[in-house]
Amino acid sequence: MICIAESAAAPEGAPDTARPPVALRGFRPSDVTGIAGIVAEALREHYDPSLYESLGAPWPAGFLVAAGPDGAPVGFLLGVHQREGEGRVLMFAVDRRFRRQGIGELLMRAFLDRCVQRGLYRATLEVRVSNATAIRFYTRFRYSVADLLRGYYTDGEDGYQMVRELRPLPPTSAARPMGGAGRES
Ligand SMILES: CC(C)(COP(=O)(O)OP(=O)(O)OC[C@H]1O[C@@H](n2cnc3c(N)ncnc32)[C@H](O)[C@@H]1OP(=O)(O)O)[C@@H](O)C(=O)NCCC(=O)NCCS
Image (tube, rainbow, N blue to C red):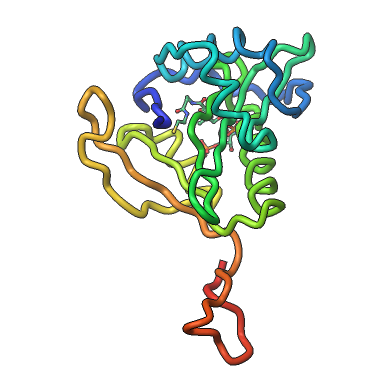
């Protein structure tokens, strides 16, 4: 599974200064239709509806939904914990009509908090090299490019793997520091 993003060339719409009333909550099965609509528009992908529930099941706290006033999703972040110590953003998108209002920030902050609460020391994601909007967003959250993934996307576009360290790595028994912490976060 990959975090497929639209091209940065797509219009984003005018910035809106009023933050809409959104509630952050966990994923519910009734969110599937709304999330699938956001995925189709923002990520141009069409997944089997059962995929969302199955991907979110192992770590429900990593599947975050921003719900609008009517309770329907206006954005979401599906994060998974597949590798030891690592949280990975699989899908992340905000409904076009609700972008540039801080909802993406709300979701990413909550996801990073959940990673720390779970004791993870790294967050990772993949992004199209053309998706300047998302890359700028991630850079603001202190993700940095760790690798170039050639031909990563099904249409042949390259991706970047981006990584953010979350806290010092636990010392290994082979190289335990004398009294200091491990790597800087
Ligand atoms: C990437 C994405 C999820 C960000 O969501 P968002 O809700 O727009 O994010 P935010 O509003 O928190 O921040 C976006 C920008 O708006 C700015 N902003 C936030 N509130 C604002 C406001 N009230 N007025 C003006 N600008 C505002 C932020 O500073 C940020 O600036 P930046 O472009 O320098 O990063 C969204 O652009 C998206 O869904 N893109 C398509 C899907 C995609 O590419 N997903 C990533 C796949 S890897």
